[in-house]
Image (cartoon, rainbow, N blue to C red):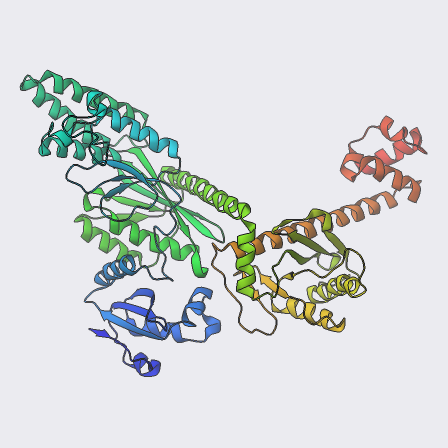
Length: 612
């Protein structure tokens, strides 16, 4: 059963009519676009949860529900049917707010075309007809794999024949079997294709058995030329098997190890495949956390989509996870039904399985760092594009050529400082950085008063038209509504009315604008958000550094003040020469005594006092 809606959708009535049954629900926007697909054990309870107090919703759901103009649902007989239907709808329609497994195509795949005589190719978009193997984090590994295949498995190399009536050089050197000139039968070619599939799937042991059987048949048929080719292929695959690390002496062990690493903008999930006790492959996936999606949501969506695409015979006996998943019982039931044999899920805390989890986490972290590096390189190479996006998103009157970001740092109210970091045309302008020692809030942790003071001090100089203190195109406050309100009060007291200003709250990367109750949430892969995060993080670093310097000097001065015979002048000489208390503590008596105004006795007093 499916329920649709009229242009003036009656949410109240539709919610009352929701059934207490399993199924799939769909959320639509004003133009009829499918925004989100979800599954539910109980449609009534699940869908109603979207219409609770907005303050209680997750950031992504809150943004989604601002755009939903209607919903409908499709009933299923079981939760497993709902799980499969959800996957198929997501794969078909690719809704904006669903996690998509192949959302971000950073890594290359090896494709096997869907033709009468298939050929191999490289792609970064594993979609459409054909079969795909990968992804490969390191392209060098992919090219080594292709090199082995092209040398020992003579598949077609070209899209179209080079000549009409004779094969090309690939046939002559043995890297193609010549299907374009009918020099190989369809059955013989299909057998080579099957062998290549086994090789790319990591089923080298199965391939070795198959090749051994083919060698025996060729020898019995006295086809020694074919037997020699099969022998070379057999030995090449054996070399690959010899390089695979054995983790279990029991050749029956079949496991997948799944682990994740994440940051604010993306998550990387790696699946290590152990078959017959050997580690045969590592399959990384880089997923963009768009529209405030959480890593946990991506992790759960990944497992469903990943195993939907796996063939039943490729499923392992055991899946080892580094973190729990939602609806684990349903997931196991569905996998077991798909495979036709029991599959178990474990989350080990010690032993060899835990070591494998740590290995998978290590690989996921490497994948994440590589993807993040590519993203940062892209934004660094085109900062103007990110700034134009920022201007459009925030509705700024001018291109944000000069941006200033302010942050407060203190320790329980002591040594409160503020930083002013400047980005010019999207890159740090360190000569323009400034730092402030806050006076008004000293002794008590008051970020609002501190922000009011630093904005007052900075913009008073702008109002007085002091050189080098011209107003920026955009002010960014590190914090939420409270810090933004304090900054606006300071600007208002100075008579500054039209200064573009925002605040950036770190927890959900929410952007607050003056006079707006709801924040703006940018895509976590947005270049505009990347620039804001860069300048915010730089302001935080600069403030923390200044605060630590002050605390270090205070600690040093307090320690030197307690030493008899050390006055302001000698204290200044010591700090100018050594720079820190740690270096002074490690200095020799002769080095201290040799300073102007010092002698052996004073050096001994200092040395003894610092050693206590």
